Amino acid sequence: MNIIKVKFVNSFNQEQGSEKLYDYRTFLKDLNAGDLVAVETANGYAVAEVVKLNTASTREPRSYAFQKIDVNTLNNEKAKQEEIEELRFKIDLQVQKTSEKARWKELAKSDPELKTLIDTLESLGE
Image 1 (tube, rainbow, N blue to C red):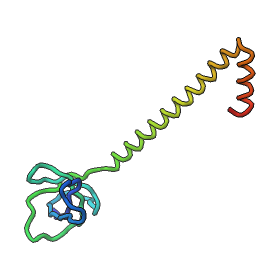
Image 2: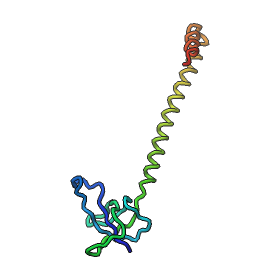
Image 3: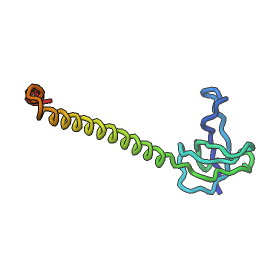
Image 4: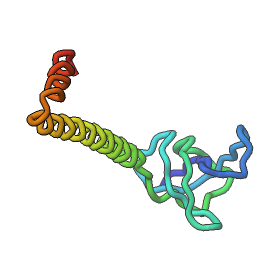
């Protein structure tokens, strides 16, 4: 059993720079400073950031840090979803362009002036 020091994250009533540190027992392995963990508090569970490992405490902590929080999986999933949205947007734009050109060419079959305009546009690289 190890003792770690943590600071709470997402605490809306704390002033910047006045982050209090708390001691927690833990059985978790492979913890590093900066890792996020779920901890027991008097008001339920909370998220805290590990500040120091294997620390000495003036009194034995009663509460536990019991679960490491993997934000990498969340961040990877968010990046994947952003990429999917961007690809869908690009696909929609390309489909729109292709459909528009196909419609123009269909109309140009019966309109020589439109065909000339389209040919001129295409010769300009559009």
